[in-house]
Image 1 (spheres, rainbow, N blue to C red):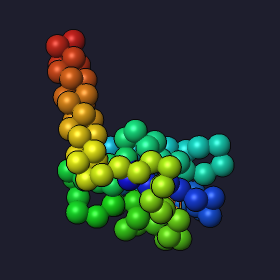
Image 2 (image 1 turned 180 degrees about the horizontal axis):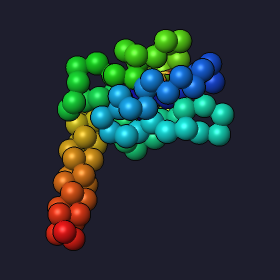
Image 3 (image 1 turned 90 degrees about the vertical axis):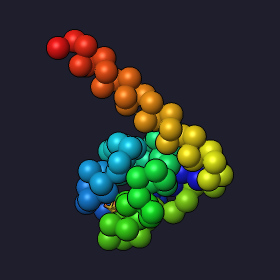
Image 4 (image 1 turned 45 degrees about the vertical axis):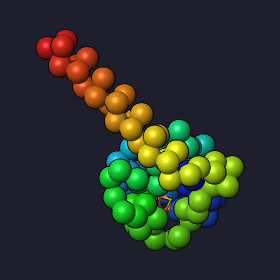
Length: 94
Ligand code: SF4
Ligand code: SF4
């Protein structure tokens, strides 16, 4: 299940650089999570890094994006494949 950021976010920006999938960005009013990129940190860490670091505990699971562990793993593998393709393309340009 992807995570989501509540409007109690204080925009401290601690979570954004900690996300291994670059899933967090600034939204209209506060930081937001792209559900297509959030794997609950599966494949990278045992615990969601953003949740560990958030000082105001405003990052719950998002019931609108229910996913099994298998689906999260598949998302992680998809993101890794895309990152590798991007990296290869930039190496070929050099
Ligand atoms: Fe990024 Fe992990 Fe937080 Fe998802 S749980 S937004 S992958 S840091
Ligand atoms: Fe908002 Fe929490 Fe991220 Fe800080 S760590 S920007 S309060 S979601």
